[in-house]
Image (cartoon, rainbow over all chains, first blue to last red):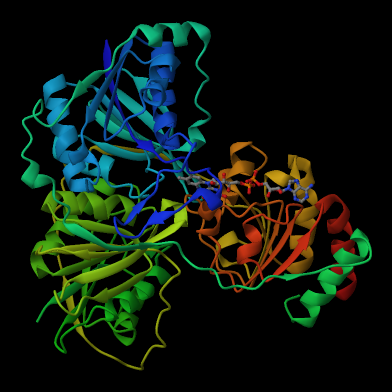
Amino acid sequence: MLNILVCIKQVIDPEMPSSAFSINTSSKKVEEPDGIPPVINGFCENAVEAALRIKDVSDANITILSIGNKFVTEVMKKPLSMGADELILIEGPEFENLDPLSTVNVLRAAIQKLGSFDLILCGRQASDWDNALVPLGLSEMLDFPCITIGQKIEIVDQGLIVQRTLSNGYEIVESSLPALVTVTNELGDPRYPNLKGIMAASRKIPTIWNSKDLDLDLETLIPKLKLIDLKIPITDKQCEIIEGGDDEETGRNLALKLREAKLI
Amino acid sequence: MANILLFGEVSDKEISSITYELISAANKLKFNEDDKIVVALLSEVIPESYENLFSYGAETVCLVKNELLSRSNTDAFIIASKEVFDKFNPEIVLFAKTDLGRDVAPRLAFKLGVPVAQDCIDLGIDQDTKKVMVTRPVYGGSAIATLVFEDVETQIVIVRPKVFEPITPTENSKGEVVELNIELDEKLIKTKFIEEVVKESEGIPLESAKVVVAGGRGLGDAKNFDLLRELAEILGGAVGASRAVCDAGWLDHEYQVGLTGKTITPDLYITVGISGASQHMAGCSSSKNIVAINKDPNANIFNSANYGVVGDWNAILPAFLEAVRELN
Ligand SMILES: Cc1cc2nc3c(=O)[nH]c(=O)nc-3n(C[C@H](O)[C@H](O)[C@H](O)COP(=O)(O)OP(=O)(O)OC[C@H]3O[C@@H](n4cnc5c(N)ncnc54)[C@H](O)[C@@H]3O)c2cc1C
């Protein structure tokens, strides 16, 4: 049986209206918006979907792993209702501001405790810090082959074949297992949980660990890249709104305006 | 004296422009007179034009030629870049956020156990600590973070393309050339390249087009892009799209503009039915002029546009297209 681990992250909903986006300047943090629940990072859901597609056609066990603070259990259980088997949450205030180096160290400690995996899947990047660093670091630490931005993953004999999205097309690469692959939205939308899945998930209890369970030295979790300022960019652009008597004239006026400005 | 090492790139047997952008970025990090900019080129072919790098500000050029250093062999680049790193022992290392750089830089950083700053759009030296200070968009561009490296020996920075302008080259500059012979064992390459499927967008490449006409979910259907194609053709430009359009399968992802798509800086960017989400703007906000056609007066796109029309494209676009055709 193929043992798959999917690492996911809970993030502030990136699709929330920009008017709801605010920053606490003293703590240098993005405020959790009122009434808008967090979500699982989109690319991480794509990674869960990738794991489920493998499980659809082969014998596999899917473990979901996340590090964070203030998890919303309903949100984090979604992969279970999609069809994943287990959920491990590493939770505590000390995990609130982990930098990528520390995140990798915590993930590695958790993986050591969990046993061994044939395939680790991660989202290509998280929509909060847009770092795209943790999966690559994890592959280095575990000495796993690393394939990024996968849009299609196939298990063959003893290895895997991955289509990687590139700026102009894609490439096909192959590696042995165990391996780590990061997943992109080009893979396709994650499936909706069905009733059976939701029922199954409601009976499952996530395993929750803290830093003591992982024997972590908190001293090592201090960021090496210090955040000194976080602000909302100001756009001082003035948009000139083009009007007209009717839509047709408006369209014409826009063309005339652009000609006047020597843009066309 | 400190070394600033930057990893340039070669594509289609030419030095890619990102290399010159990285030199400009490195120039902002020279703190002492004798800090030295080292440009490393790792490739299966070394273009003769590497001598030009001196005219753009390189002081040392390090050439590593090996047939395994072809774009798809990330593992080979990681082994080679580590050797180049050991040779020059730099305090600062710069990579570009390209298909290659975004894979190699983080893995080199983790190998060395040092932090890496991702997707930087501005760089400087913190006067107090003498460490690198970077500015970078986060939360898809909804926020801008300033970060400074703590007391670490090596600072690795990944630079966003098309942010730093190459300098005007000085004539006949000379410098030191170091040819490094690196043995690469094929066995160390854990991921094997099988095939590349290139899907260039039709017509003028999106990234170099002076005019880009882009459509969003508001266009409602794949076939409505015909109007945009027509407009792009008249203006001698290229067609682009938001992620919503590519996710819906109306256009291939090669057309996607934005944080996880292409970064473009055309003279004129015309958007139709695009809301202007920060992740979209991340790929086009440096366009010289932005025009927005959107029926929602509160759409984000109007905060970034120079010219806007509030209305239904179904009614506006045909008349606009007709007038553009007449004026051309
Ligand atoms: C991590 C991450 C990365 C992302 N990367 C990218 C990226 O690279 N590129 C990207 O584009 N997005 C990206 N996104 C997605 C982004 O957040 C938005 O969801 C996306 O850009 C929305 O696309 P849109 O503007 O076409 O659609 P919508 O937001 O749905 O906007 C459609 C617009 O069309 C207008 N409209 C509708 N009908 C008409 C009409 N008849 N006439 C005129 N106007 C009309 C509406 O008023 C609306 O403003 C990313 C998101 C995340 C979380």
